[in-house]
Image (tube, rainbow, N blue to C red):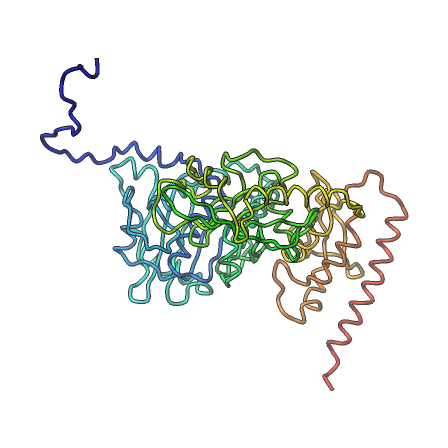
Length: 517
């Protein structure tokens, strides 16, 4: 028996001493299997950049003709000196976080990185210290938590390569041996990167939308290091991540919204909840492009302005189609509590019964209940579903080479054909009398690189240059992809479009050659 009746119960367990038990080296395997998704892991590293007061961050994919080589995250934050690097790379060390910090547990840098890469390098510089670096691998952790010191000359050269981001201070996080990259078949790098960057752009745009709206500059770039020339090679894609505000509607789906409800939660106090109702059938990116409407209804929890859960009712009720317009923003209290718990990966909130009980008692300033809000959201959905609307024809989605802002508007305005590879725009060699050509097997529009300067006003164009020209060509040529039989009338149309566009190139060159009056 555990307890013998008639004897006195011992409330405190007596002890006779202590032993310090450092983690076994095998802990490294647990560290690399935390279940981080790729986008979640990258976002965790960007949190560190934001905590370091960075206002410019670049997620940088390096590739050559055959492979995706490396992932870098570069920021212009306050950086770290030698001691700071040692602390950041210490496994199991939990530093003190300020009330406004995005970091929590002190494991994100190591766990997020080694969940995807076999090697983690961090190189950093402060305004008062020279560039320094540390290298951590899963093998090093198994070897009594060994962390290697990066050669000082390499660290300085590495920082100097990215002086467009790191001027006086900043940090570079480098992943090598990324397992997802190593599984990409030869010739499939473009398709892999296109999908990976699209998912990453959506995730970062959503979870960091408040920071992006306040001016954080966050870019995703792809460089071909095997393209020849000096330095890093040639930039082949560049995306400026835009905020995807899950509450960014222009007009609410029901009058007198949003409303603020206050839920009395035992052990937490009054919890403020801002309840929103979207317009039915909205085409805005913050509604349609952040995932399934079933998954995205519900609670949006924020911690220090960083979104940490995007949708879900946390057991209060099940997702339902007629609640697709209902979204509720909740800022987590700054003080620690036992009611709302955030997981290590910062993507899910676990709640206790006290939270769900508080929802049943929540009211707004006029005494209206939170359940009345749910009824309003259902009504808005049903009313909107009965409205007649013009159904637009699905299109093959736009892809690499077209400005991300243009792609977003196209996706808002036009439904996509499922399973179609996006249409890519690239500059390449073509006959002198041809402005563009189609590669229908690979869904590529090739523009004659001879005329690139003419449409960039003499400047060297980037990956997403001449947006007006490319957008007009997309609208003209979209229906030429994904077809079975190629009709002569379509080829004739391409031929006279090319002839007319060549005339426009001649006119453009004539105007450039004329002196300004």
